[in-house]
Amino acid sequence: MPKVLIFAAQSLTALVVVAVLTIAPAPLSSAAESGIEKLKWHDEPLVVPDTPFQDRDGTDIAIADFEGKVLVVNLWATWCAPCIREMPTLDALQDDLGGDRLHVIALSQDREGARVAAPFLETNGWSNLDLYVSDGTTFARAANIRGLPTTLIISPNGMEVARLEGTAEWNDPAIKDVLLGLAEPSP
Image (cartoon, rainbow, N blue to C red):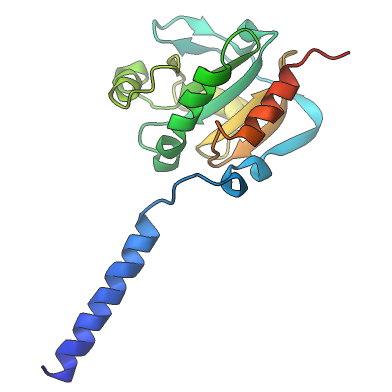
């Protein structure tokens, strides 16, 4: 076989390996990769925008409607690959801890709203998450969101206490412990 063909085959093989390693997302599985280290705690709690968003039926809702609960407000979109990657962990978090003290608000930023977000949640089997939608700019602008996914951690008194830009494994025990700590009544 001529050296040129051998070189070409080796180069092509190397290119394919690099492409696969670059494109294939690594699973979020170890505690070191849970994302808790990316959680930025605010020195002083921030006021959360009172900008309304909508539920599945188109009813306006605001963060204040959930007073008394720790909220994990995740801004996501159907076209956002990192968002999609972390959605199963948000669904599992809502299944494990959702209730009287904690609620996950997966707030779709899709411009087409519930028309695209609802079937997307259903197709992927994320049945523990209620559908919430924003028009893709209103709530995000009011909350100074710089990109997707971004998750706001809201205390039971309705203040933003932390923010995570990027992905996390929301059902990781370390993250759950932090969230449960926020849900505990103050002495």
